[in-house]
Image 1 (cartoon, rainbow, N blue to C red):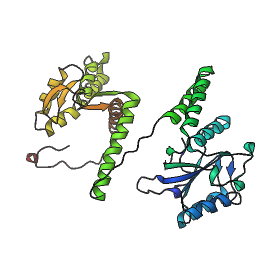
Image 2: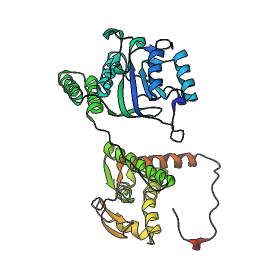
Image 3: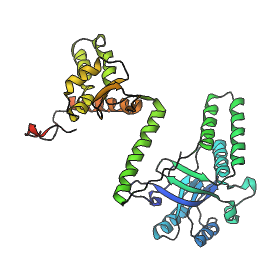
Image 4: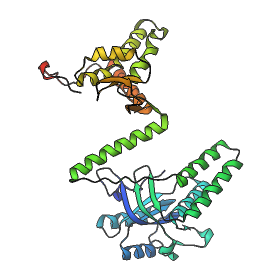
Length: 340
């Protein structure tokens, strides 16, 4: 739950992420400010030419400046992140990371100092991806038996604790240790095609995560049309408020109308027909047929649909309180067909 300390550690400027392949991981439970203690292990890393991730309570001053300068010069392929959590929970989470990666937490309590460690005290992972907010460790080399033992220990602690807060945090730690990480490999004939495929897969992964969080509904705009039935009586409101409800009820049919229009159908007719169907039923723009959209794989994450509606309402509210708006001039040729 922590990202890179400095944006200078970024390796992919387009996505603003740091990607380390087959890297070593230094885990330290104290602040690192001086370069003297860190120098021996950095020299060992430089000799073998491998990337390294440093996880510590904080990295500042001379140590951070030196790491950044060497990263920019290409002398070292390093990145640094702050350790997750606070207090005793931080120490426990660092131990989780050490077990996952086959490393050791460098701490005075276990008789280890930064200037005394070798590569055998470092963890390793096949891949590490760091954004400004999160760090993902993929395929740590820690022994599966040790990881399983740690998970069993944490589950036992969950059973014993009476605190909902502690239980939640312990469950998060179990999920991070026991949860698998999927690696999707993308290939294509050209670099442009690879990027396009990667963007599509990233969109699909984001949509899947949203679906896991809040579930799914029938896609193609039909869920919004069916939800608008709740607005049929104006919610018991009067005057301008009732008018506002009517506007929303009409607006939520627009996504479906445009899908139908782009498919060569009469949009308003399709919206009217879908409104009469049962929830889950709707219009499939790909086939031009009506049916069970969920069974046909035409679905939307609830979170995406809800967020789109909330954002649209926010923008509409802003426009209503704006005296002047700059918009695009509408096309004069109506014969060119509809696009959306």
